[in-house]
Image (cartoon, rainbow, N blue to C red; front, side, top):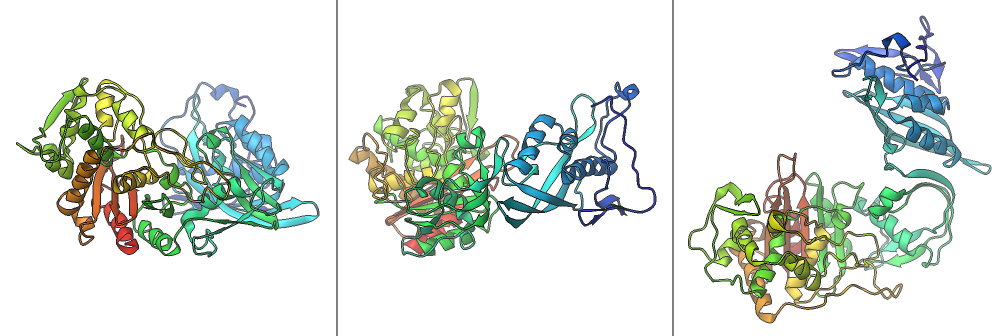
Length: 555
């Protein structure tokens, strides 16, 4: 590409019209504010004479460079010049494959691309096209964006290639396909028989995709013709379901009843909307039925599929382990120093506090890290893993909820990472579904695998735990969570919920993130719930009010 001659801009006087867009550059204060596409060959396509090959461009991109690179790509794509559009990106091979599929597999015709106002190196654009299948053509419109970067090696401005440039619902490796759907649609119902839609409950878009994938072929419906996202290997590994983008001809949906409670679901949606990047799950503790699930970001179901360090909420599991092994007891003296070193790492408490001559009750309620880390020398590397699997049903990748889920991870670790796992860091990964289940297990004394669709619908077998906590351990664990809800770090959020409630807060540090992820897990009556607010701060202040509000309503 570097030996091709630069293609000169052809228009010096009158702008051309392409796809209904006037080809002009509109200057505004501070640089190029907006622009349209040029007819003919893509102007400023970034190629250079051979003599300039040794020069490597560096430094921040100028507004003109962003404009030229974006315009080169969008103009070529709009005109169907796939090779030329792909060459305007930093990954021509991947770009060419997806852009060819856009026309051939997805059958998307005559795209009209309208750039918006650039924001630094990011350029939003809108797409209006037609999806053709047989003798029918269906309008298809959406918004997307691209980002311009300097290409490695020569510093030339190029579109930073990701599949999401073509459509925001795509992840790298995914593709667009139009045709007869292999899976019929489903009509999902809540526990009261009301229809569930993404328009009514925005958080449930990914859940509805998962229900269709799991039950579409057995729910009694017939497939229609649609444009859909077909997931690639990477998305499949993350258990992301295929997604319908446009229905060209209607199929006949089958019916699937879920366990969702419409009032709690509506409240969960409202609660997470108050925070950026918040997620929550509510369960019926005695059965495992999922009553509500919500995320303030609707593109990924963090509540079910997230894999985040749960911070101090993991101390519920660790406390059960320490009590089981006789290493802790509610009112026994228990060390909570400012620091404790293990495996070459120096651990400390939040704000470096200490509790002198304190009890395990005090350490749990105040969430003392060193009280747990100090027990690491007395534990085997696999003790926490076994406790999570055998008592709480976690980290075995065998939950059958009805839609894709991540079932927690508590890997066997050694030295400092093992110690960090005791406080929900290290290699431990959870989501609100997992942590709501932890509280449910404490409340009932037995692990009940959460589920969204009754196993009687398809005869699937729910996961079980191989053992239960001894009665003495369970009683102490409940006492710890009740005390924390009444007088510890969870007290403000849980105020007024009564004696039949227990809770644990958590904050998980994330590299490169100014504020920690705030976690909260709790139970009240027959309800258990957990939530996380990413980059929100302490769990009692962020996720706590969300969880407590739902327990208050459901109780």
